[in-house]
Image (tube, rainbow, N blue to C red; front, side, top):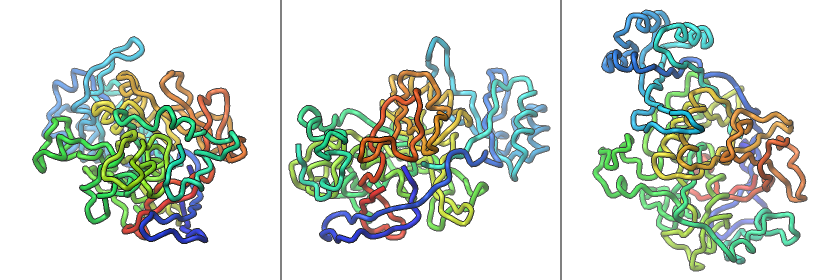
Length: 441
């Protein structure tokens, strides 16, 4: 999907009670843009794990001379565990344990490759990696269903949703992890009629709700999953301003339990998957269930688990959306540990940031990962799409003529093709955060 630069209000004005549609067109950079300049990820073996001092690690030291000398030289300020709650699993015949993975943060920019090579030479280091940064690339009564060509164009060039809805409208026992820029979970076509910008905690609808945390004790990890108050997913974005200044108003400081969207991309993806259908509001979606014809607080569709791994930043004088591979790895492990069997990844990526093992972890529990093929109009598969796992589905984009979208990457590694041009879906416009929007992009 394309990022957005300009908000252009469409020529028709909707009724004030409905979400407002806008046409969005924000060109984006394509693919890899660099490595995180002041962080790396490292996997310690059992000998280091047993010997390290966890209190000193919070200040960048381990209490092990070889690591501490290197940490002092490059001004390491923190060594933090990444997957404290992960469980040992087996995948493709090998045992997998994420417990040894840590993140090292430095006080200033480093020569990433040089520092990685230095750590790699120390006994007890099982692996060490940089962190890649990529760009985010039945007939219902919903008001804007007629504008959603990809659902029902009546000429066999769409996905024929009305025909499919005769058999299944969306199974609410399924959870889809949306690994993206966050989700406007209080959008009323996602979070239901009680959700609003003033009362985001009233979101329900087709959003995944962690009820043990929602109904639990504030500031306490009620379900013991390692995340406090994660009642509607999690925000993994953490101190990214060293790469590019965050766009004014964006949340880039630290991880938290509020995975709300700022950029807009993640909300568009979430609505495409499971906006509330036949609720008399906004749009329809592939697996949004089937409401009673009126706007309701609850939904019957597939549940969306919002996991924020991307953000907006000022880059080359423009607003650009980015995603980091270490955030994605953390989100995939969270998804696997909290019941998501499906995951959507609509961005480019590589195997850095310990993403490779995190994907293994997610797939080992029966997960299926849907991965966008890319927007480079070439035959080159990125790391995730080039993997041979049957449970990774690479998705190319088609247009309203049932042809390859001009921007879509392609090749014999593609699993399926699906509409990806001028898709109308839910949206968050950070220039007007009070209003629910729909966006055509």
